[in-house]
Every structure is written in C-alpha cells, then in structure tokens.
Image 1 (tube, rainbow, N blue to C red):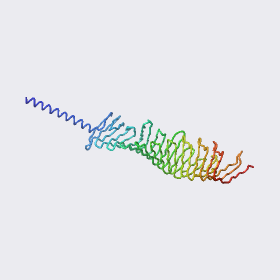
Image 2 (image 1 turned 60 degrees about the horizontal axis):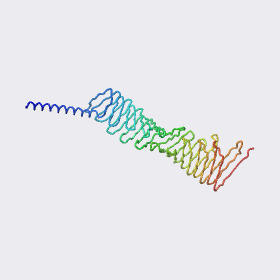
Image 3 (image 1 turned 30 degrees about the vertical axis):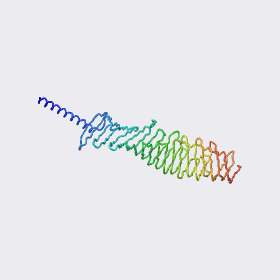
Image 4 (image 1 turned 90 degrees about the vertical axis):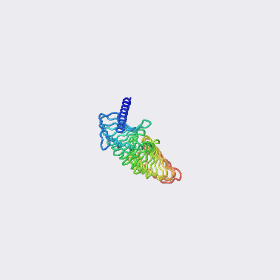
Length: 368
C-alpha cells in the first residue's frame, strides 16, 4: 500500500515536473519570439549580454503587433523590441503601405525609419491613392505622422496634384501636410498650373492649398507672383495677396488683391481689388501702350483670350489705336467712374464705353 502511494506520488511528481518544463518552454518561446513568423528560409537565435537576437533571412514574412512585414533579411532584438530589416522591405499598416531598401522598426515608440528608394502609398476611402517618394522617411504609427526628406515627390490621384520638395510632413488623420525646401505643386490636366513658394500647405487632402512667401504661379500663358496664395480646388479659385502681380505676353497687372477663377487650368475670370493697374497690347508683337486704373476690375476670358473687361471707381485709362489698313491712328485718355471694354477673339478692342463723371482727351490722325 505504501509502495503504491509512493509510486503514485512519484508519478504525480514527474507529471508536475513535465508540465512545469513544458509551460516554461512555451513561456520562454513567447518571450523569445514576440512576433508571429509566417515564413523564413533561415532562422538563427543568439543570446548576447542577456538579450536574445533573432536573425531571419530569405523570403521573410512576419507580423509584429498589427504591422505586417516582408523583407530579405531581418534582425530582431527581443529586449529592445527593435527590428532592423534589409532588402526589398515592405510594410503594411492599415491604409498605408511602405517599401524601402532598409527599415528600422522601434516597437516601444511605434516608429518606423525607412531609407533608400522609399515609396509610401495611402489608399483613401474612395479607393483613390496618394503616393510619396523620398530617400528618407520617418513614420509614427500611434499619431500617424509622416515625415519625408531628400528628393521628395508626392502625388494625389483624387485632386490630380503633383508635388516636389526637399522636406514634407503629413498628418494622415487630418489630411493635412506641408512642403518645404523649394516646394513646387502642380495641378496637372490638359495644361499644367504650377505653384512655387517657400512653404506650401494643404488641407483636407488638397481641397485647400496655402502658399506663403515668394509665391509664383506658372502656366504656359502667364506668371503670377505674390506673398500669399489661397487655392480652393472645388471652386478652382485662387486668391493672391501681398503685392500680387500678373505678367503675360499681352498684359501686366497689379492690385492689392487678385481673385482668379480657373477652368481646365486656364483663367476663366479675374477680379482685381483696390489700386488696380493694367497695361496691355492688342497683340504679342506690339508694346503694351494701353492702360487702365480703377478701384475694381473684372476680366472675363474664353480660351485664354479676354472677352470683356469692366472697371469701376476712380477709373483712368489710355487707349491707342495704331494706323492700320482700314483704321486711322487714334488715342484716348479719359477718366470716369465706369469703364467697359469689349474685345474680339484676337484680343483687339472692339468697343469702349465709359460712364459717369467723364472727362478726357481724344486724338486722331488721318492716313495720308
């Protein structure tokens, strides 16, 4: 009886020891591998100064937390919770996917540091994408902040925006970002409209763009400069402040404020406010001898040509008609409160009308 009891006690003891060993083995394995390994051609585990380091190579695929990784090689530092990956690295985190030559992942701070041929792609709720290319990128998973530098190229499919700069910061949760170090932002379509400045910010994924200091807007037809620009993509409207100026082969203009409305990257309407001044010619091969000033001016365009212009308040103007086959030379300088100019599709003046408090001088000369 005692032997049986002793035998049973010994057997129970052995089971207990086996259970403890198995439990400790699994616990050690969990401690050793705080990630989920899907595939690796080679795995080596070493212990250095009390820390387990896992070396993985060949067709790697694993999860660390909720983040999915692919790479050719990875070193996982278990205690520090750091993963260093090299070669064809791909990272997938919710709506954001990233690829690079090298990636360091810091689990404790949820920070990713990517280097070499970095490409990031964000998928929007409407299935359109935004992409970012750079030499270096830092991405903070918790706050979803994205910082790129060196040869940055960005593209937004939804608004058809292309950008280049030296540095870019993007807050994914807010759809807000800014471009620094020689930023250029382009709206690409049939004709390209480009903006450069010292800093360009965008809100709600390019629904609104703000450019500050040394702002220039380029197209094949004109150049505009100012200190400040607001652009609203839904309205295709731009507001220029801070000594705005307009220059083209046909006209130059300045005012305190410009409001420009675009259609397919061409100007559809321009409104100038306060201290408005415009000088223009009727063709590109002629000097800009005609001019007008006023408190408010509105220009309407069709296919890049001015159709008509209205000027209101303290209007002063000068128009000169050169001698042509069917026309004599004439010039007209007049003041008034309202000026209306109608032009044909070649930019030549067809009709001038002035109203209220009119005074001026009209000159003409017959051909010999």
